[in-house]
Image (cartoon, rainbow, N blue to C red; front, side, top):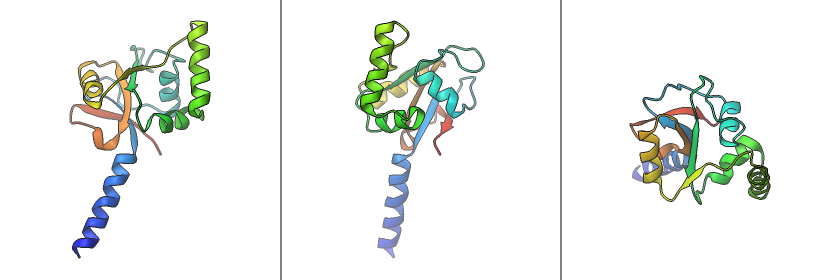
Length: 136
């Protein structure tokens, strides 16, 4: 019986760790976003939320979920994404979101800036963050 509960726990834990969500500070004016809003913000097609407030996308450097996130929102693999960013940078039309070295720095920035938005695993969401988009 203990083995059964351990297996259930491990299964649910791994699903939580693997599920990506888009988050902001709990006091931010944004309640939810759709997939197009998320894509436009993170691919620097816009720097505004639907309500007109400035959007500041941030992310973890070398994150395990980064490739999955961009594949989901853009359909681009890491090589295609690098080409996309290179083109935007050299044309002066945009740059990738600011990267943070660790989760605690990223979460601290999110919690203390109402305009910041990022994606993390569901297991990393704190009480001071709110989920504004869930991946299907």
